[in-house]
Image (cartoon, rainbow, N blue to C red):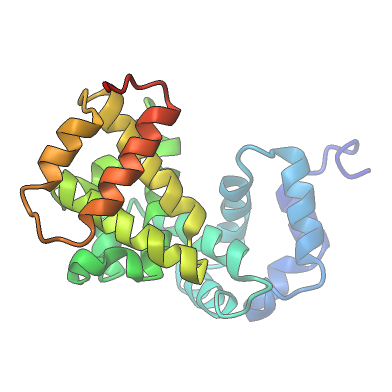
Length: 228
């Protein structure tokens, strides 16, 4: 009905009283109704449209407080995290800014043990989406600015094993590792033998086996020629 009447996302935000919800914005019984309408209007840029409306009615300071509180509640954590990322993007904050803001620059090899690592990877992917020419391996390229590419593979291998136990961010870790292996195979021209040689430069690292076996499986599954 609203759509046929030409109602905008801002029109319905006001009509549902969300412009006056304050700190209870995400918990409001009308918020889900509004989100559903925004998705109906623009399913491919829902977060962008939602935030553009919200910032008309609330200052950055208020939105920061609202999203911080909403992130502590399971029922509102996902949407609050998305709005937080849109806020960062609207403020022009770079991937490096958020890497430091989340204190991931202090994490070292334990980067993927930090729950905020998933927040950062998601933000990198969000920024890349709005680039004129999105990069195929955006998150991996950002990570390789900070870590040697073989060390990064070791970190991802270890984190993937841990995620298999804890369930934390397993899908994103698997996607990251597949992106790196695809880069190795199709851009760097690496094969399992070459990868084995690369990781063997640190022969006592117990994470090596995960990298070698993981790449072997990826290479084989993606049409790589294995010499017998």
